[in-house]
Image (cartoon, rainbow, N blue to C red; front, side):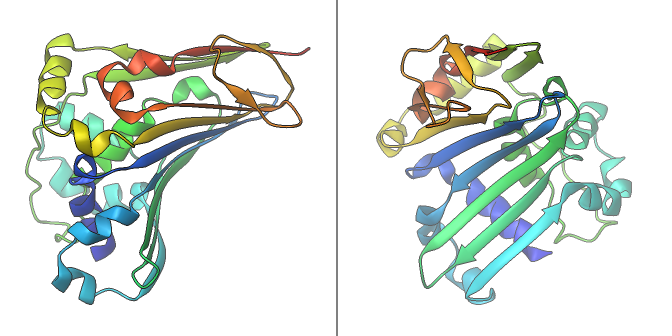
Length: 247
C-alpha cells in the first residue's frame, strides 16, 4: 500500500511544475455515466525521493479503491473532526489508477467514479487533492492527523436534464479562496504552460454550446474545451458551460 503514500507526496508538488489535467465525462441517455480526472505527472518524477523511487518496480500499473482504504482506516478516521470525516467519505465512490514507468519517464494518475446521475458528483479536482489525506502506509490503528484543508473554497455543480447539460464552478468560501489565490503567488511561472481540459461524451449530437472556443468530435457527440490551469485555479467559473443536445 506504499503506492498511495508516494502519490500523496508527489501531489503536494503539482503546483511547482507544469501539469495537465483532463476531466473526462461519459453520459448515457438515462443520465448515468462516469467521470475521470487524469493528471500527467511525468515531470514530478524529478521531484520524488530517489530512495523511495528505488524501492518501486521499474513499471507500476495499480489501482487503489478508496472504499477499501476508508474501511481499513475506519477506526482512525473516527478520531478526526466530523467535517473532515465527511470530506474523506466523499472519496468512497472513487478509485485511483497510478501508472509509473521510471525508464520512460512516465507517470499518470487517473481518479474516476461512476454515477447514477451527474448531480451526485462534486468537484473532481477537490477529490483529487483530498486523495493525499489518506495514507494506507500507516497502520489502520494509527491515528490520522487532521489536515489544514478540511474546507474547500470552491465546488462544481453538474446538471443533465432533458436536452441540457451544465457545469458550474462556484466559490463557496470567498475568504479561503482569496487565501489560496495569495498562496499561488510566486508559482505563476511554473503554471504558465499548465492546462485543464474538459472532454464530455454525450449520448446525442451537440446542437449548441455556451462557450465559443469549444470544439466537437467528427460525430458531433464529444465536446472539448480547454483553459489555462492557473485561470481555473483563480476563477473556477472559466469552465462554466451549458450544452444543448439535439432531440
